[in-house]
Length: 121
View 1: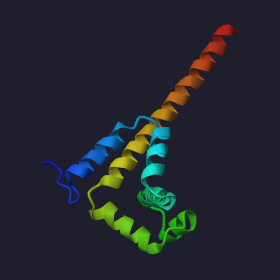
View 2 (view 1 turned 90 degrees about the horizontal axis):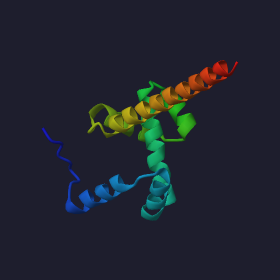
View 3 (view 1 turned 45 degrees about the horizontal axis):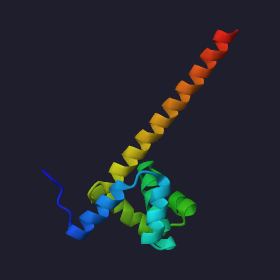
């Protein structure tokens, strides 16, 4: 069954297609700096960090201290994690997978360097 969004419209579809067309972090910075205020971008980044910490089972107190998010914001994000559209979960799972791949690639590079040094001896 396809997901049906409450915010779906032709305009939002075009916005999302535009976002999906961005290829690098630099392009994202350029677009979001033009699209949003500084505070809006920082608020979105803060919410993602709160969601990440909630998934890591951090306490509200720990999250509040580290992110400076209000307990109301933390509670609202927790509600979305439990009963929302799974948008946070989707992003967080993909970011975790990217991090695992980066670690695996770094370990492979280190092993390759060790093998090269061993062969030279």
